[in-house]
Image (cartoon, rainbow, N blue to C red; front, top):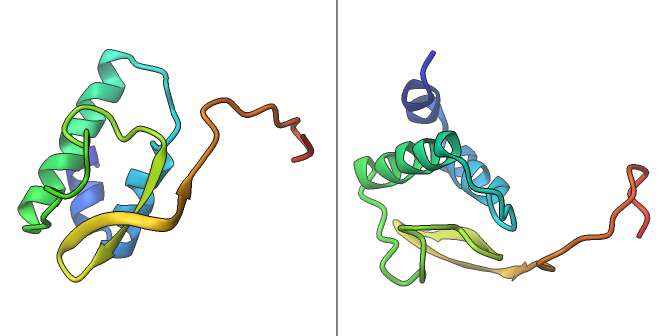
Amino acid sequence: MSWRQLLAADTDAELIAALNQEVGNSGWVELRGYYLTVLRNELDRRHFDYSAVDGLMAFPGRRRFALAGKQLVYSDDSAIPLYRNTLSDGTE
């Protein structure tokens, strides 16, 4: 299945979870850019309003998202550190 098909089959909550997985990821490659475009297109297909969210068109940044009806908003627990010093066992 293509990313488009996989994202189209996701529930709204799963789609937002997929978007939140990109938060804090500062790496950038062509394939990731394509994935984010497909993800944004799926948000558009579902008529989600993300006008209140800064920078979504280019990069998810450092804040997590939530849905309020059909509007994409920053979640209450949205701030994450830019750099994480987390070991594989989860300790810092």
